[in-house]
Image (tube, rainbow, N blue to C red; front, side, top):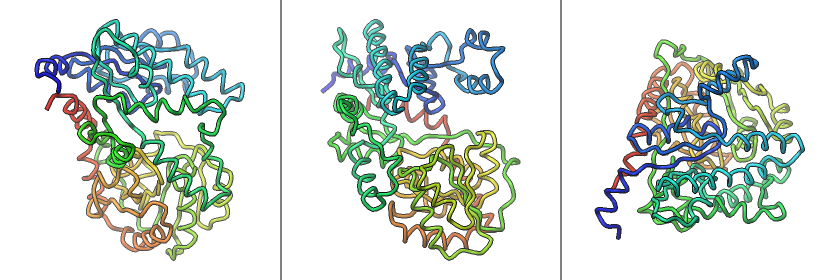
Amino acid sequence: MIAPAAMAARATSTYVCAFRGRRDAYQVPLALQEAGLLDQLITDVYASPAVHSLTRWAPSGFREKLAARKQAGIPSEKVRCLWSTTFLEHARHRLGFAPAMTYLKLDSQFSHAAARRAQSQRAHLLLYSPYAWEAFVAKYTHEPHRVLFQYHPHSALEQRILGTDCEQYPNIRESFSSTQDSAGAEHLVARERDCWKHADEILCASRFTKLSLLEAGADEKRCHVVPYGIDLPLERNIRATPTDFRCVFVGSGGRRKGLHHLLLAWQAAKLPATSELTLLCRVIDREIEKMAIATPRVKLVRGLPQSELDAVYASNSLFVMPSLVEGFGQVYLEALAQGCPVLGTTHTCLPDLGDEEDGVFLAEAGNIDHLTSQLETLSRALPGNADTRRAARDCAKRFTWPAFRNGIRAALSPA
């Protein structure tokens, strides 16, 4: 049992946060900073004023991407960039190394950096699962509070679900290339698989992720669900209700997202002749792409600027992504915020967001017959249905980034 005095000290001490990329729009370190709890954010690329001045003559596309690598409210002096990881990442990609292995090898550098910073400042740790292992198992001269943000379901559950689906659809193998199959990679995979065992507290964005950890053996009392949020668009930007049944899928076209299930259900469903399914995929498995090309009333778009996605959600009757495994699924909230109802599975954040009265519709994960039935039902219920679109937007209003940050701080506070 932790003494009350120690709990009080812990609640007011600062945390080191570390991750690569623009993880969750920097909302976790922002939550810490707003409460005076952020010691340092360790990341790869961050748009500090100095970086901006050095890249002012860079191509506009690069500068736009760089501008997104910053969050108002986080002082630049509290951010440390591991630039070498960015250079090494791109070098390995050019040399043909598997991206998954590259990320696994580089992630440990963020964890080591977090450990050194926590030791030097006697700080605590709030680390995302790929970047936690080395810092959590390190030796310290103080006793840091180790908080894990598990943003993806535990790998044991993911491998079981995807493995079963692979047996059912063996021709779709491209997106099931696992680093666990690579020689000498087991210790790298174990970093993320087992780091929860060394955490004092575990934060999850969905109940499905939490359940995967409980199945692995985690203590339920240490696991807290804090759903993600979204920045709501202005009401005047919401478009009129579509009168035809128009569906859209946004995401990587691989096994985990269930795109092959969606295409099979679309082929089997009895839908109005004017129905249309648009697939927005930057990457897509070759076999799934063949399925998409061969499926009537399906349009494949290979990538779309983020700035144009809101208009896509607003102009479609339904967003559908029947994921087999999803830590949360931010795209569901993005669609709901535009008044677009969503159809997904129970293996996502959707059970946490609402039900059919909120424009949230579910199909059993991996059940193509159920997915087909839902598509048929919604093709009759959604076109011209302004009430469901208003309910969808109202649902999104309950999940804001300020609410997420409050949830993070509440989970860190002593009971």
